[in-house]
Length: 131
Image 1 (cartoon, rainbow, N blue to C red):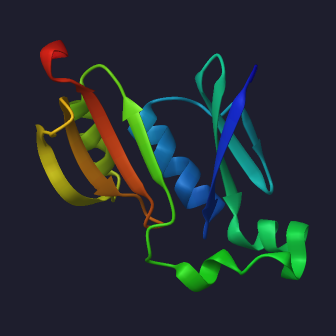
Image 2: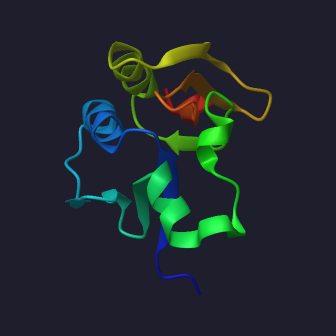
């Protein structure tokens, strides 16, 4: 059984990404040290922000440098939340780029899509009957 999951996004500027996610999620980091910022999204899910240079230092030549993919979506953070439109609007106000307005998806969720400052796809959603 998995007790806790950490989803780590590689970011070009840790402080900029931290400030973005503080504004969007309206959460304070549970860890904020050089090389890692973490947010507790639930009792068992942590969102981490690690500088691209940090993962390269950690793993060296065993992976490609994530900075080479700047602007290319490398991850999707799909969050089911109450009031997803408010989260989406905060993301846009914080500098996200809108990809898709809040609308009904063919799997039944209502969702809005954007890109965070590092080009990761950020989705705020709810089940269609929850709105």
